[in-house]
Length: 165
Image 1 (cartoon, rainbow, N blue to C red):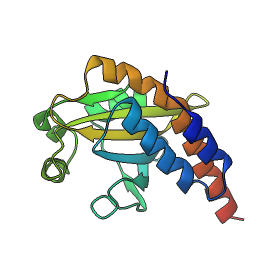
Image 2 (cartoon, helix red, strand yellow):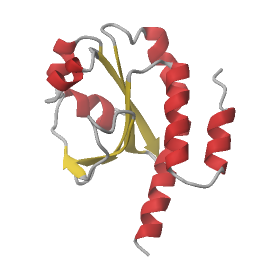
Image 3 (cartoon, one colour):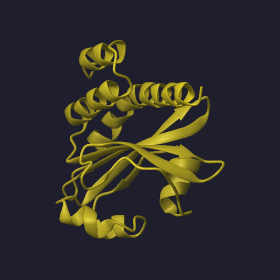
Image 4 (cartoon, rainbow, N blue to C red):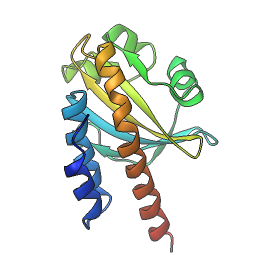
């Protein structure tokens, strides 16, 4: 069982949602391991996503929304609400246009963990690492990240609501 103590303390602190995002990154490192970690929102109605956190902001900055393509990735992650796994750069290249950038960072495997709130996928936790890194045990362990991921998505939604007031 993961130790959620630091995450819970970060969520209870001020400075949200950034503190929660950083604590989630640490939790992800502890639970499944990660070289590059991002958090993306997903709007399945308008088919757009937004990067709201990045462990490498110089390479993958937090940015505005962008459309996503209908691929095997979106079918698995957004429609079936299952974790997407690609353990080779060749498999990553089938669904992500930025596969060359991913490879240049020393990453050749990815898991995208869908975060569901109220029956809808509201985002994904994106974990990248070495080739063949995401074993069945690590993929199962990633389920423990869904609730903290949902908390981060809700904190993001609260921040957006406050900004629009």
